[in-house]
Length: 450
View 1 (cartoon, rainbow, N blue to C red):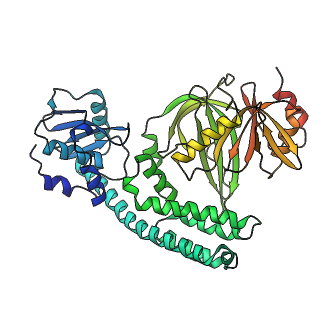
View 2: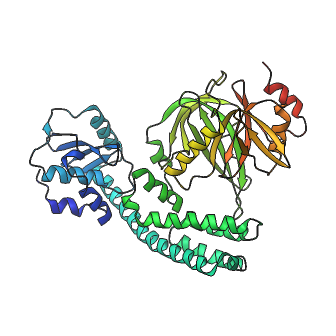
View 3: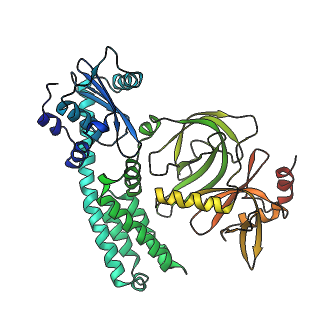
């Protein structure tokens, strides 16, 4: 290999990526390497049990890694080049690369019209993201100082602040390319006037402070958590990049749906939750519509589709895209939820450990009974454990009406304090809990028919 150490390190998009790559150059990180002429490949054992596949074609200076990093070259590509350059024991020669390396080579062939154009485009994208990252780092410092200043003055002083205070700082966060932070800051003015406003504001401030601290040590975090932090800050993933990832093929039941309208602009968004029959995975499809426009795809709660879902990267992946799908004509035969509220609580605790900004969280409980006590609605399982229901909307009343005093499976969104019920599940279908006040009896007969 005639590439010098200086030439390899000069390719690094920034010093953080280079330092990360240097930490991956030991032989224990590369259990498999190979070479064929000027083509090199290797399997990198990064953090924990995660492995990444890398192909480097030195003749035309094209590189590919399956880590979906926003940097090019990523730390795994740089690490392979540094490893081969500094390792006296050369990679095993082979006439043909392994199947996975050949597949990565195919993606190189189909990425663009020419090698030079691809390299120029990838370098430009990496450079632009590095420039954005610098703005974000300064914005993260401003956010930390601002939050500490709010805490020093006390929460009682926050309620007296004019709405312009939040809008002004939110604009600063937009300028710093921290759109996700800006949206949460703008919401401060609505929280300040609520009865439980102080509690909600303190929670928001704590989550934003944790986000700022995590961003300061971004490169030391696991890959999934890095992607989660960037997403929370406002860095969006392109659909084509997401769809290039590995998918999950299954029969998916539309288990629940929520539609909201943004307060800041004429934007509507819809959350549709899907449950996998074999995988038992829950996935979130997020759709947007402007003004009076309709959504691109209509999802009917209770219907099933056969298809392949691709999940966005993150610390606890929930949001997904359909790569392909078609209606399923048979009843859904997957499991109908956690066997107990205690099992759900344990799953939720583990999810928060993976992603502390996780909200809302999908909850599917099997054989629970809705009850009302002193004006508060609860779901009660067979062990007499209770889970509070949200007091908003008519869904809790509809759930109480259609249960008939018996147990049923319930799906909803958990916000850490209460469950917002969205549907009841039975007979391989999900039945929405909205719009039932006029005739719940007909709905009830359909739900419990044999």
